[in-house]
Image (cartoon, rainbow, N blue to C red; front, side):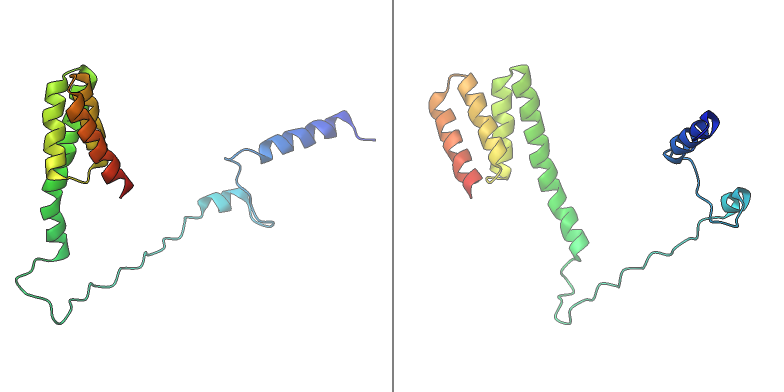
Length: 143
């Protein structure tokens, strides 16, 4: 038969074992020695240098520069779309239409901008334009 004290000790040990801050120590090693150990630093492998093809044109900018050249176009589309969303939420439908038209002119395959443009047109009662924009949205979204 188990004593009440040993059951309490087992329960306390089980509760402590589930805590994240309890550090397990291998047999024969003191807790102070385990706590004094520092983590080993592991060096991350360095990526290999990018090879330049032999037929590369010297006047062609490297890929990083090309990505920077694409970024302003992407930012322009994103800014116009965000402005359109803000205007749409505020009920400024004419301003939203202007912003969404800027976005779809810069990126004709931006499906969500076409959809929101259709909503803005519909809110202004321009049903024909809303229907045309929604059809464009459906065409772009399916491809």
